[in-house]
Length: 378
Image (cartoon, rainbow, N blue to C red; front, side):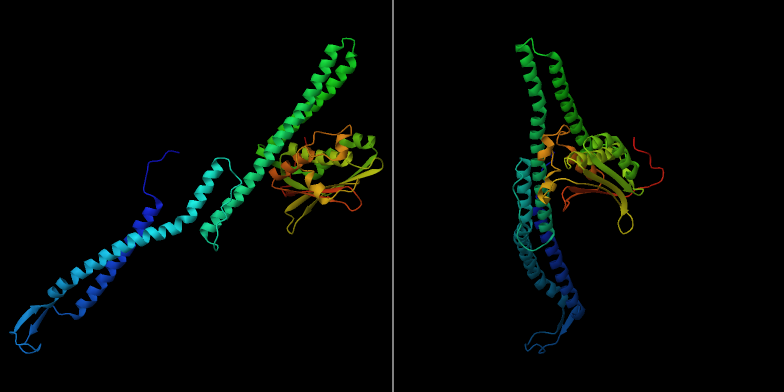
C-alpha cells in the first residue's frame, strides 16, 4: 500500500519525550517561583545601616528584582532540558525500537519467500518479546504448511500422472498392434479412468473440507455409523470381516455429507487394512466430556501391528501402508488425510492409537450439537 511520507516513530518518540521533559521543567520552575512568591514581599523598606552599609532609606521592588535574576537562569535550565530531551530521547527511542527493527527485517525476509528465518529476540519477556515469539511461531507454522502443500502438490501430480501414463501406454500398444484384444484394452482403460476420477473427486473433497465451504446442520453420528456400515457390508462379507456397530445418540453439528464421508472412509479403511481372514471391526459412538460437550466416533479393527509413528503418518496425503498398494481396494491414498481435514474443519480432533493385539483404534472427537431434529444422513 502506498502511503504519504511521515515522521518516523523514533523521531516522534523523541519529540514526545522532549515535550514531556520540557513540560516537567516548566512545571517545576513554576512551582519554585510560586513557592518563592509566598515568602517574598512585593516591596521592602531598606533602613540605613540595616544591611551593614551606609545606604539611604527607601522602598525597593523585591519581586521584580528577584524575577530579573531568576528568569535568565530559568531560561538556561530550559535550554539544557531541551538539548537533553532531544539527545536522550533519540537514544532511548532507538533502544526501545531496536526489537521492532529486527521484527521488520524478518517480515521483509518472509515477504520474499524466506520462511526459515527466525527473530529469536533475546532478553526477558515483555511486549516486544511476546510479539517476536508469536511471529516466530507463525513463521514456523507457515513454513510447515508450505512444505506440506508442496509435498501434496508433488504427490498429487505424481498420482494424477500415473493413470495418464498407463492410458497412454495402453493406447500405444493398441496402435502398434491392431490385432490386440480391444475388449481387454477397454476394460483396462475403464479401470485406469475410474481410478483417475476417484483421485480427482478425493482432491476436490479435500479442498472443500479445507476451505470449510459448507453449512452446518444438526447431525447424529450414530446414524452415520449405521449408514456407513450398511453401505460397506458387502465389502466386509467379501473379505470375511465382521463389523459391529454400537453406541448411543451422538449429536453434533456440521456437514452431513462430509461427516458421512469421514465415517465411510474410517470404516472402509478398517475393513481393507485388516487380517486376511476372520478380521473384526468395531464402530462405536458416544457422548463424553465433563459436561457432555464432546462426542466421539471410534473405529477399531484387527490387523498387523503398527507403531505409533506409522499410525501418525497414515494421515498424511498419499501415505500408504504395504497392503494399500496390493489390494483391489487400494484407494488413492487420501482416505485418512480426508478424515483429518474434515475433522479439523469441524473443530474436532483425530487420534490414531495402535492396538496391542494389532490393528488401529481411530477416534474422532467433535463438539456436541443439538440432538433434536437431527436429519438422517443423505
